[in-house]
Length: 263
View (cartoon, helix red, strand yellow):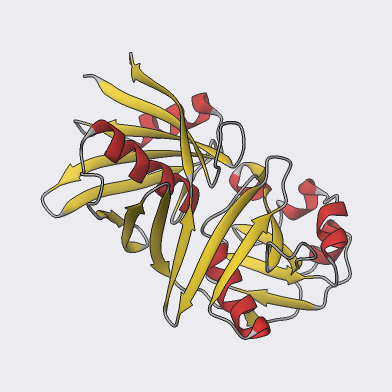
């Protein structure tokens, strides 16, 4: 069986920025053990597996350690790979059937817009060990479906954070979002994302975290259309539009290489 595989930098306008994802365009099904083994081999935050179906595509995401229910940057990468391979047209909407329901991706020039379920965080008490692990003083702590969101007072606090990943890995969440209002007027908010329990200490740019960030900051700032910057070492820009129970996430993506799997 010949399987085309891409490596794509998502939420990036040029190579070696944003968040790299592998995308496999599957022509026949393979079992979960094989998919997990390949994800570990790739050693990227996500490997996406895309297969055809009559009403769109099946899409699954694996970190090096486990399968996850939602991943934004690998969905963005999958949409670009489908267009590059000719599986969809340049203006065609990609329909992905996933563990998080139906997701769509629509291209417009160099930008791809994802339509995801909104995930407004509900204020909560911080879990035991959370603040010790992050080493920050929170202005707000909230919990979404997958992640905990922690707001701090300044962008400097976000950038300077040096978490204890061993402690973070013990928390009963997929990941922790650290965020603050942006000081750079090109952006509305900044964030970082830590998920050591899922095998990724710090994710470079996390699309799915913006399902939580977009409604939170829209309510705080009084606007539905915002621009976020994920302040990892690679960095990446995510444009968001909050629309009640849905959120649109837009980003650019760049193909780094195309290849064929030999196993």
